[in-house]
Length: 296
Length: 298
Image (cartoon, rainbow over all chains, first blue to last red; front, side, top):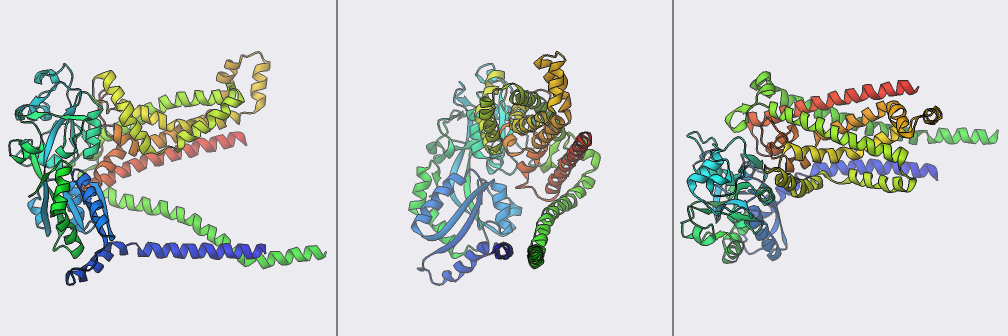
């Protein structure tokens, strides 16, 4: 009896290992599956959609994309969409490498990125809010003041009408689309596109992490997606223009950028269906509801 | 006689099963060795070329890390990793060893029974939870008290000191309990007070065990990533005060690996090589310490 048990254990373990190896060998399949299942559907349009989409990139677009993906999955039972962050740079590079089917970016594509066969579609507009702690008495800054603060030339809040406290500058990691767009719009780059932001700046690696840091530090200043500003932080007026959907829309608020989705080459049926949904009235209503600006 | 024969027979019949099982165990053991070997080879193959491309001196002693502009100096990260680890183990070590003394020598048994699961629970908390705790509590507190950014070397040290406590407490306590009873009895019989006995007899006798605990603490502190990334501020600069924003070697890798390309990516692997060498040195130190203890006990 005992002998049998040992044999069974041994055989069981062997089987488990073989099964494990089998699973490991199979893992690449799910990523290829959607392309395979979705491709034939281009011809038979009304068929039920199914498959998996990997979406990733900008952490500014991520909250909006998650809401859109949830809604799309609710309408299409067979579809699964996984949304992850990483930053615009990651979204673009990984889509070019085929890791993501759809990449998210919160800045325009560079020429060398377009050369990789990536097709951008603008799904919304968003302002970049220059953000300070909710308790900071400073409510408005000029573009020039913002430039000097981020270059490290203005170092105390008292120089811009605040309390006598050092300014703590937060920035984002190099792959961030918000950072790219902010540097460009605020002219914080030299001729070779190198960042002029002070070396003393603290770095946060996502939109959410930046917001949490600013919320926790009375002397902080940073920049986040306008759509994710809530009452934990305060967006300051830039050149006397309040940062809001209306001012971005009428063009008076200077710091805005597009939200893009990118695909490599021609989108598959499933990718196209999801992007059509995002650009549909229903999808764009969700964009507006979330505090971003509809592309239409 | 009959019984003996039967036992012999069963043993012989069991041999194939034993054979398979033995080899299965061998395979399992080899798997972990293979994992270490593969990681080591991969890390060195992908990391060392960058050190030569950048230049060992520029890489290890360079003070400017601007990967997008072709400057790859990791000295700020090395200094920050070493300083934060040493100070964290200093602070955590004192608290941890004293806690161990209390649990092994002074606390009433019911309190030890309460403390021990608490310490174990502390060890089980995922590091990202420590990080979140640090980001939402320690960082704002430091910001409020100092007026500077809360994301700082100090926040890293406080957090790391907390995270290594369980390791230091449990190993030190074991070391203290392993000190032969006769030492304590002899000391007390000679008229030494309880605290004299603890500081002059028990702690010196448990020294090598406590040292091992500290070295393991160093290993945990220098390798910690997820928690410190949330509180460090991540500025690649050489800290001049406790309130400066810092970036450790581990943060440097985790922060940029997702988007780095080309030489930048290789430089991150090279950062991993440096970290790996640190950990290897620590492991050798730990081996020497344990061997010395075993020799003494033998």
